[in-house]
Length: 318
Image 1 (cartoon, rainbow, N blue to C red):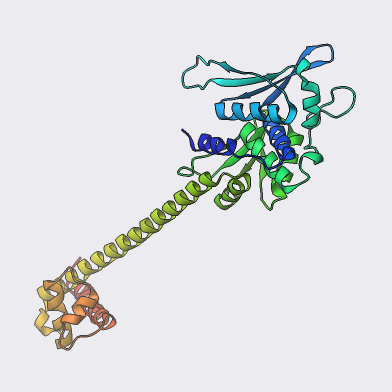
Image 2: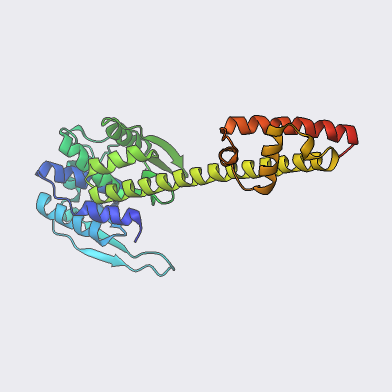
């Protein structure tokens, strides 16, 4: 089961505290998953289609409890491979489809059937109604990516004016949702993980929110570990290369003038370095008598490099 499906299943279990919020939630669902069909002169049918039976059951209950409309859920079997069945609820004209569409703010109230693109203000008067409408819109035409892969939450609609209205509603809570056109659709989306978390919280998807936060923490820890490992690997490589160069310098001196002709302090560090190629500068310093610090060891090895470079030039050593 995808993360998006888990999130929607969780949202369908939320019970609205008021009847008005239930109407707003249904309006959000119908806006993005409903379609109107002419069924005769001045007659319309409403079809609500979803791939999740949990959403179909949710719509059935909202229609029953808020509008006393008893409809049936039919299943359309999809013969195509890897495609889910779809669940369809039909509200016919004689069942009050026209009145329902006007109550849901999809048709203008009054005589005639005039579509209404913006969200009706009476559906989003309270914060509870606003949350319910956004939740319904997500159930009707929303999706969220698996946080293991990327952070992306979106609502898909074919109406540009409604997309603007939904974007404004979401952003009224302090979000920064945007719109992009995808073929014939208009997509309201959020990409930042923090904002997606906040929107899940706003809709009431607390389990999904916790999962997203857990995944985010694990990803950040994994990235930090990789960063530390990469840094340590780079430092180790640098140290190994430096040690090889230091030993090479000492070998040049050994083959030309001999280590015994170096000043005593340089002789000490040269002999210890040849015998302990794997040690760090700090560890080399601790082996000296008296011990010296890392900077002191580094200073002596630089002196040895200067002598070795002069000998390479003098004796034409590559």
